[in-house]
Image (cartoon, rainbow, N blue to C red; front, side, top):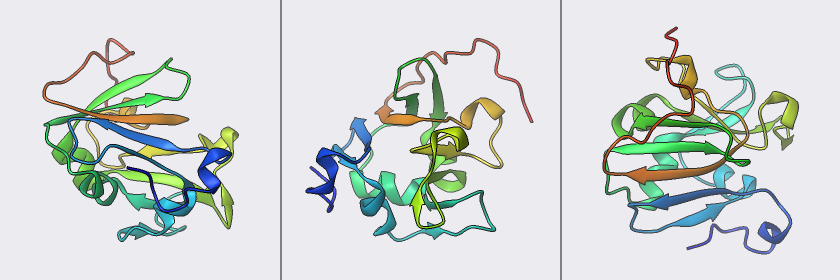
Length: 143
């Protein structure tokens, strides 16, 4: 499944939702902006959408989400319930895409999460899994 901005997705950055989901797909900034659960600037550093809204649109069937940077260098495995209830997918700054120097084009923030390592920059994929996967940081520092 593709998000709604299919013509823009050939050139626009996308975040992939894969793994144990009913509807795997790719989502561009425009697609994320069309989901319910929008979070505005002032609440977060940029514009975003509830991670729960994105995951719900994909039909998760597991208990964890491995959030991985687009370059594959960083991964955090987050309980689905916590990511869905507390997490935000940040995709914009003003009317523009979230720039790389701010963690873009997509960044996961979990403001009340158990560990700072759940705040992943440069996200390329959110993979729903049955069990937690190894994090790229062996010891997760807490807030």
